[in-house]
Image (tube, rainbow, N blue to C red; front, top):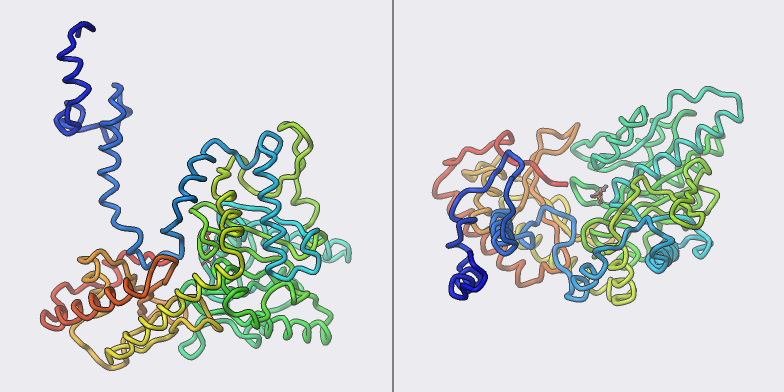
Length: 465
Ligand SMILES: *Cc1c(COP(=O)(O)O)cnc(C)c1O
């Protein structure tokens, strides 16, 4: 095309994206593309394809943030080029990370919050891996010093998130997971004590169990382990999986003693991108005191300029999420977090009361701020068949865009199917009432057309982490 040909140039500049040759044909899906395409065309193509992902704000299965203030979007954009690992290149981002570590240590009542040790991670999974390794190393060091074998480590947990299964498998650790029973859905001190021995590297209670959203009794377990130490000499450390609860209990259940106020709690992980209200991609691990992190887990690198301490598993990692975490701490403070989460708890209680009124379901957890996270879950009442199961209800709700997962519980309660709603920042009371109306409509429809879809656990997508 000759450059002086104004008309055809203009044509091309002003052409409609969907009338272009790029979008009129089909683009490669399995082969590496040859040609370059126009950026506007490709943007439209990718943007449009993502519409099919559905609306994240209506995804009530996820614990992760789906709403952020405009300032957070702006900071994320400004931090696109910041690599968390380049602490010498981006010293201020590194400084911000370290302030967040100190603020969290303070929030969790570390005896010396200004001198504690910890770091940001990609999420709780990486943080759990680091906390788990520290427990293993500390136990090994003790066993070695006493001339005892250290080849059969075990870890005690309640019904845990998959990251602890991964930790146990990756590091060849026997996982002693306290199974659920119909009358007990979380770990208890008695069940923990039954499983402790000289090879136990630690006990991990969860503050906000994935399946039922409840807090496990950290203090009671710590007390029981104190007693065990008195009678048997076994000194077993604890790590709290506070993926959700670490950012909830300090604000909404201040009397609950679960954190570094308990000397036995040596480390805590949390997900910044869950109730920390940061964008996806940040978690935290904090040790109670510097001495609680074994030396072997700290790496010193000098090739970034300066001699830098490196604890995380990943090397390069985006800095924006950490910067936005800091923004949230300053922007919201204690009171802001308490208000936002408090509103979520109220909405969870409201939805829960409405679900109860329907008369078909037993609410297992109703969003009580002293005992769990802003969420609710329920199962079908025993011995009734209203013409649908919870998988079918979940499927029907999808026609209105809601994702309300139904799933079976882990052992020993695999025969129990429950349904769960997470109430996050941005799930307002009004949005909650619209959901309740849709649940009513869905049930009316399903009763009129009993078991038409006949969906079972095998058909259900089952995603609920
Ligand atoms: C979400 C969650 C995890 C995993 O956290 P990520 O931040 O997604 O890696 C671990 N434990 C519990 C209890 C969780 O809720």
